[in-house]
Amino acid sequence: MKLEWIGWVATAFFASSYFFKQPNALRKVQAGAALLWVIYGLIIHAFPVVVANLVVASVALYSSLRGSTTTKLHSESPAPPARLQSWN
Image 1 (cartoon, rainbow, N blue to C red):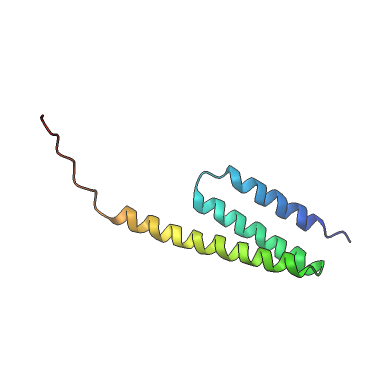
Image 2 (image 1 turned 60 degrees about the vertical axis):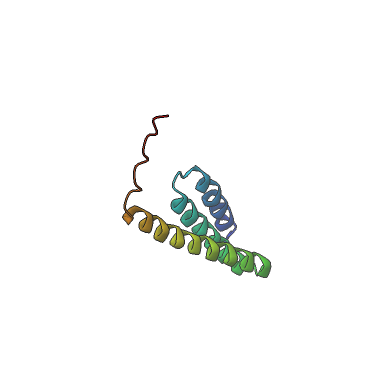
């Protein structure tokens, strides 16, 4: 049974992530692709592939969660005061 298709699907996911306009969506797709690479690395017994993609998935998920929290905080904050026009 050929399992290298998992690597090809992971590659396609990762490449497609660059077409997402929303940073959080991009990071989530990249995290999913990295997790597919982890599975592929486990199947082929490639420890560096597993570790590298665990790092990528962790950072992508962390920054995605951090970004959504930051966005939520900014959307709930009041609008800044309007600037006064100077009449010089």
